[in-house]
Image (cartoon, rainbow over the protein chains, first blue to last red):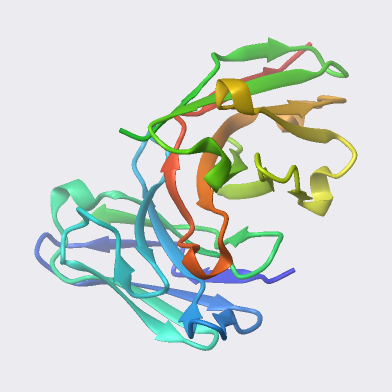
Length: 113
Length: 122
């Protein structure tokens, strides 16, 4: 199984500041035929199902604000919120969908300082 | 619009079984996997398995193999997840989520059900 390790577990950020969340996979998740990294980021607000933010490591889902960006390749990935807003308070998860079992990171809780 | 609507909350006794439904609309049911993900209260997300309504191919997470059964009713565009031998640590929110069938188009889970809370208590 591919293990996804997220860090930090939580972070407190002032409004308008940058938040950076890291995710490491235990092996590569590059799908060679389309050269895409099969890594997704989700946002889960309290009492709601997760929402897809980013797929293929760096492609924003339709409707997702451009303050959210994803980067990385190989086994190291990053989700960046360039200017944190109050509505970004949530838990963020990475997921690899390269191979079954699909696996999630442990989550990172983002709060406002 | 794409929708996945799950059945209501359940309370079960240890050793019992539960069957959760996920009724879909707004897309071609047989073009997508239906995935099942659970979340123990206060904890993270755990993928349980997925089923292809068109081929019947199923992938289970090893942790749940033997206790979970995924099925679909294509005429009703509905997927089901049955979990047997319930224990207290199966108390969780269970989500269904859509996933692209064609590998090169896969993007993760773009639409989710609202979740079904299953409580296991004597």
